[in-house]
Image 1 (cartoon, one colour):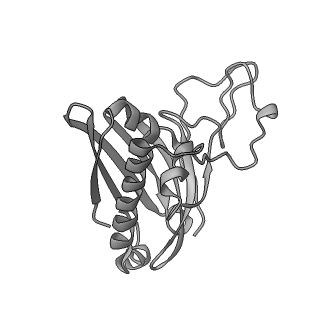
Image 2 (tube, helix red, strand yellow):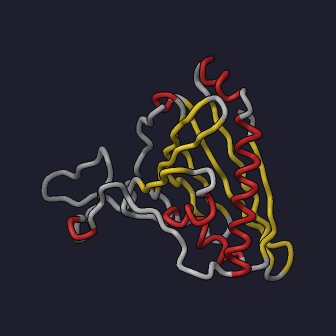
Image 3 (cartoon, rainbow, N blue to C red):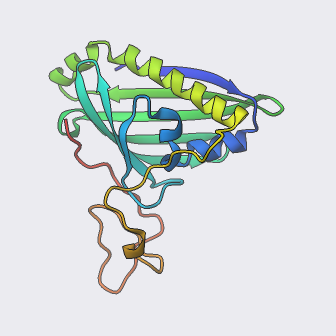
Length: 201
């Protein structure tokens, strides 16, 4: 799918906008109109290594997306990469660029792209998927603007990791994620990042 880019202007400083975008647990507060069944894939929700998983009921069929933040430069840029489509055969990416055209005003530019790896996935994406994603991403940025400019009025919805129990979480700096286990007697390195695995159809 060709990249889809949407924009919005938000009358708050970049730092506040970045803080909300870089916290993947807060995504349902402004994206749950199209990102269904949203869950975290790691207990950590902020910065590089944080990630999520959700369902899109899009033209061409339901698909799941699983992503990880691969770049987070406050307060300017957030980049996420992952997989979607049948058996995770389609690469997915999203990029948020935050600029400040005037004092106290932030311009948010969101670009989303996919790279299907076979003809079947390309056909599925040709059935209105680009327009579907663009319209919903634009609405998401408008919801983000209203939350930041007008206030939510109540605590924002936050995602949790599926099956995660805080009292049973690893302690003392160990890093929990799927597919990773530190050698006996060692903790995971701080730079360890989760990689998207296979996702459902």
